[in-house]
Image 1 (tube, each protein chain N blue to C red):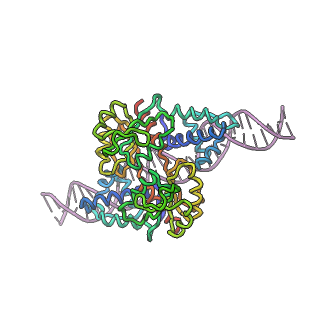
Image 2 (cartoon, protein in one colour):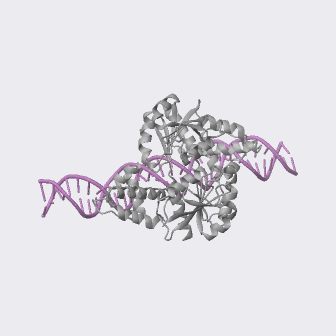
Image 3 (cartoon, protein in one colour):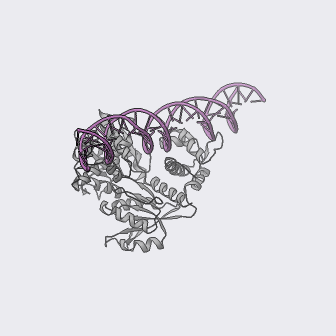
Length: 207
Length: 207
DNA sequence: CTGACAATGTTAATAAATTAACAATACCTC
DNA sequence: GAGGTATTGTTAATTTATTAACATTGTCAG
C-alpha cells in the first residue's frame, strides 16, 4: 500500500493514542476526539483513515480495537522484524528503553559497541555485542533495521557496514548525513537542528 | 524575517556543514557541493540562501566564513538564550552531550530531576536542580527553552509548569503530545514514530 | 414515523514545499 | 577579446500536504 510518509507517521501515533483509549476503557472514539488528543484536525484523521480504507460504525465513532488492528495490518510487517542499536551510550540506552515492555512486531535483539566495559553485558534489556562481531551477529539474527547512535566520527563507516551486513532500514541519530543505496530506507533525525529551530521561532515570536 | 520551518532546519544544517568545511580549510563552496554533503539538491540550497538574501562570489561559490556569519545573523538571537533540560535520564544526558564544547548562542544552564541521587550534582556538564526549585531557578536564570525528557506520565504537568515559569519554547521528546499556549513554540519528536516509519518502508520495499 | 442532528467519507480548493527551467554573469581559454 | 562554460538567482511548474466544503447516512427525540 502506497502511503504518504506523513500519514504513516500519524498512523503510528493514532495507534498509540488508541492503545491509551483501551486503557481507559474507551471503546469508541470520534475523529474529532482522536484529533484533539494529537492536536491535529479531525479532517486529517478522517483523510488518513480513508487512505487505509477504514470505515467507522456510523454515529458511534471508530471502534478502537478494530482500528488498532486495521492500522496494524497496514504498518506492521507480517512476521516480526529484528532491530539493532549500534552504539549503546546514553542515546542508545534511551532508545532501547522505548522497546521495553512493548509487544510489537519490532524486536530489539542486539546492540553493538566497542567499549570493552559494555561488551557481552545486557544493557537496557538487550545484549551488547562487540563491534567486531557485527557481521556474524547481524546475519545470524537477521537484523533488518539499525538504529545508529554512535559518535559522529564513526557514523559513515558504521552505516556502510550495516548495509553490507544486510540491513534494509536505518534510523540515523548522529549529526552526520549518511549515504545509503536506494534499496535501504534511511530516516535521519538531528537534535541540534530541532533545538536551533525552537530557538529561532522563540526569537521571532519575541520580536 | 519570516522563513518556512523547513528552511530554518536546513539553515542549521548548512551552518554545521560549513563549519566542517572550515575545519578542512575549504573556504569556498559551490551550491551543488554543499547540497551533496547534505543529500539534497543544489536548487534547494540556492533557494534557501535566496530567502535569506545571501549572494555568492560569482563563479567561486559561497564564501564559507561569510555564509556562516550570515546564517548566524538570521537564526541566532542577538544575545544568548538559556536552555534547560527537564529530566536528566539517558535521553536527557544524551541531549546535554550535544551542547558540550559548542560555543553558540544557546547555553545549557540547568537540568532538573526529582531523583535525590542526581540533585545538586553536575551531570553531563550541567548542574541538576531539584524539580521543586524549577520556578525559582527558571526565573533566576531566565530560561527560555525547555527540553523535556521526562517519563511520559509527567510530561503534561512539567510542560505546564515550564510555561508558567516563563519558558517560550519547548522541545518535547516524550511520546505524549503537549498543549501549549499560542505564544510558546512547540516542537515535538517521537522516536517510536520514526522507528515504525522505518519499519513500514522496509516492509514496503521488500514486497 | 419523520425531521433534525451529528458525524462520516470524499471531492475540491488551498497552501506549502520541492523541483525544473532558464536568463544572467563572471571566468577561463584560446 | 570572443566564445564557451560553469554557476548562480529567480520565476514558473509541479508535487505533496493540509484544509474546506458538502452530500450522505444512521440515530435519536418527539
